[in-house]
Image: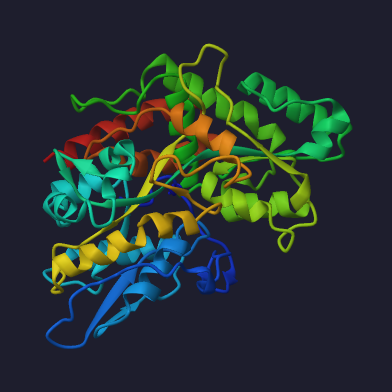
Length: 438
C-alpha cells in the first residue's frame, strides 16, 4: 500500500516515489495539523528517550506518521520524523537494518519486502504484542488480508496501516464529450486512447508510471498477474519463459504510442503532473495518489477527474491489471528502545480514530472504513482490492524484480527485442532466486 512501486529490496514494493516539497515534506499533501489526537498511554521510560521514525512522505502515509508523532510525544518520549522521499527511505531502511544497532526505532515497511526482512531476522515478530494489545487498540478489526500480507513463515512482522491498489483516474469531461466509457480491457484502453488522440486534442492521453529504474517492473508484474501468471513460484522457479510472459511484454510495447516518449523517466509524481496540467486524460497508479487529484489547489481540472477500477489485460483475464501493496509499521530487531513501548506507539497510529482521520487520502487497513461517503474513489478502490493478482510471498521476489528491471527498460527503449529480453529476464530471475535462497 504504497507500491510503488517501487530497485533494491524495498523499491520492488510497487514504486511509489514521492514528489516536490510541501507542508509535511517531500511528496506530502497532508499537513501535520491534520494529525489525529489519539490515546498513546505508554509508560514513562527510566530516562528521556527519543524515538526515530522512518517513513516516506506521501498523502497516504503522512496521516499515520503525523498521528504517531503528535500523540506519543509525551511522558519523556519524543518522536522524531524527518521529511524524506521514497528512494531515501529505501536507502535508510537498508542501512538501519544492516548492523548490530541502527538509527531508527520504527520503520515503515511493505508486504513485498517482509519475506526478505523476516527471513534474515531483521525485524521483531509482533504476534505476542499483537495479542497483548488487541483489545486495547481494537487490532482484530484490521483486515486479516492485510495482516497476512505482513506475515512471513507464520509470523507477523509489521502492523498494517493502509493498503494501496491501482486505480484509473480519467478526465470525465473529455470522456463525456467523446462518448467514451472507462476501458475494461487493454484493447479498450488503446482504442479509448486513440480516440482521444484523434478527437480530444491530447497527443499522449495515457499516463503510466514506467520509471526505468523501478516502476516499469511493477507494471510488468501487474500485466503478468492479470494474465494469471506469477513471476516466480514457491518451488524456486521463474515463469518468464512462459507464453504469458511474452504476451505481457508485448502488451507493454503496444501501449507506448499513447504515452509521452519520456515515459521511462516518469515515476508516479510525474504521472500526477500529467493529469494536473492536462497533458494526459487517463492515468493508472496507486490509490494513495488519487486524493491529490481531487484538490483544486493542485489542478484546475480537479473537479473533472473521475475514477474507475483498472482494466483487465484481456476480457477473459482472471485478474485486473493491478497490484496490491500493504504498508505497515515494523520494529527493527536492533533498536535499543523497549519493544513493548514501540508497539503501543505504532498501534495508536492505526487506531480506529487515526485510521478514520487518514481518509480519503489513504485506504486504511481496518475493515469497512472506505465507502462512497468517505472517499470519492471508494467504489473503484473496493473493486480493485478484491480483484488484484495474489502476492508472491517469497524471500526472492524483490530480488527478481530488481534483476529484471533494467532488461525490461531496454526492451521498452528499443535496445533489446522482446524475445531476447525474455531470455535475459528468465536467466536473471533464475540467478536471483538461487542467490536469495542460499
